[in-house]
Image (cartoon, rainbow, N blue to C red):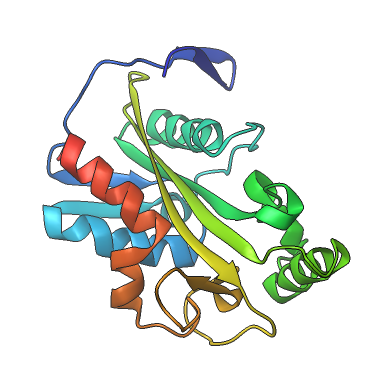
Length: 216
């Protein structure tokens, strides 16, 4: 990846050499319960013992990056250095073609504070409609996974799930924008499909498959 990331008052190099993740404790650098559930299901079959940043009471760093990989790198390095453990961070979001890729890296911010994803979904659909009668409803979920070690080493993997938007939202499973997103080749939204199916076809699953092939 190259470059560096600033964590606190220290600058950490983003190293490009390859490293394998050993079985044992892995810090999940997220406070999002939905992401914790999905990542836990992915890592546990590999003998990895996940613990989340939320469980350890670690602070959430400001997500100042302009890409999914940049934000995931910031979060992974912050957690790895704070807990002195290897850390895995996820940064993901919904990219809508009619909105020139928005909300993208600010997907969570569209949900406001406190986060209300029905309000965020309503805003997405309202803006797609405002783009005109011929505006496409195509969209994709993008996920960046970054592994970081306390010495500053990082490895990044990005996954994508293509699909389209529907309105009104359907289903109570999943989290975030899932109830308005239908993956390519299926008819149900991510809020309706069985979680096991989502774990096989989602953007996070795509990124994890690349990570697992490379780092496990």
